[in-house]
Length: 98
Image (cartoon, rainbow, N blue to C red):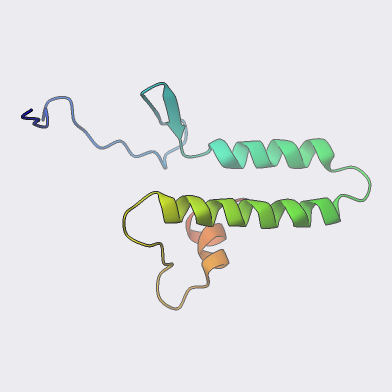
């Protein structure tokens, strides 16, 4: 089977811009989806003593994001030199802390 890339249909979409999305194989890929969910969860549960639960949720999100970054490519995930892994998640990738 000889497969070639269709140059007319192939393009790069900047998903880091607000409102940009791409539908592919039944999935809608958007840059802000995780942060929107985290902010909604934080607003809903931000009553009473929520700090311990937010700490647990932050740890869970960090672990899942690192796991996703490790699985998304054949090359192993490593943050840039002189940057802590979690600082990379929050500052460069824009994960919202609770």
